[in-house]
Length: 210
Image (cartoon, rainbow, N blue to C red; front, side, top):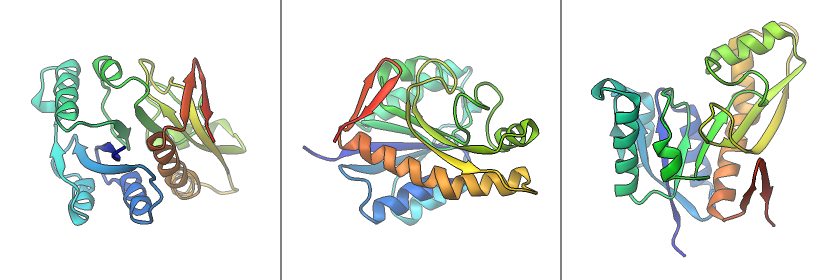
């Protein structure tokens, strides 16, 4: 069995991509390898992160396509042409239409900076998620890695990790803590489990196989 081929989709700085690159370098992504980084923005720093370690980068800008569906279809063709086994959304800020889920059923992972089903869905991305958590007054937040399905942030949950909210947290401070304590740990872990064929999806339940 060859290694599973992973594509990471990014839109900006690529901090979660860096966590994956670092994990790969440490040998923690068992049975898989990042072979492509696809950015929705030409100047995304994530592309530089990929170039530094020799991972091919591609740009698919939303403005080059007449609709989200057209962009999604082009993206699916690109992923298929690269023989991708696993798609990882790492801060990819565009809504993709159903074609990608059909092409990659239970083979698209997303990381969300909250404990789904809290603070998720439409409009809940980036700093907004942490603003919502602080405004609500929760004591614990965290991150979730889940499979992507047709519903925003609605796919089966693979891993979750809680992060405590501290006195005086700002959205920026909380965002950083959630990344360091949860996102950067969970995402490589989930990718590695997928690449080892250790994730079994039964309805909403994801079982982690020994």
